[in-house]
Amino acid sequence: MAALLTGQTVAQVATTYHLDKSVVSRWRRKIDPEQLQRVATEKGETLEWLLLDYVQTNLRTLKAQSIEAGRAQYVQKQSASELAVLHGVLADKTVRILAALEPIEEVAETTQLVN
Image (spheres, rainbow, N blue to C red):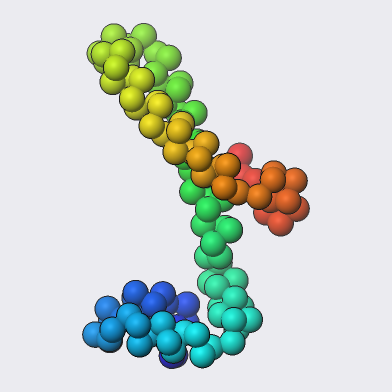
């Protein structure tokens, strides 16, 4: 239980201590949810923060790829289908993640967006 209270995941604890995940999950359910949330907050890796960070990283990557894909030297070395797949897959995944997030007004209230 101590490992769970330090912020380790069920999978990490199970692997580290050679335990069945179901056993560790039962232990986790016995811990007060508020206490687990405090640990997650102190650790700085809440689900909301991780999702926002992931989306921001993807958006920065898409921007960099768009800039690179717009350069003549890069475009001339790629086929049209390769360029379409590269941009399309990342754009699609990012849009799907954004669709699952809270409205931007609610996110902005709790998290400052990084440029």
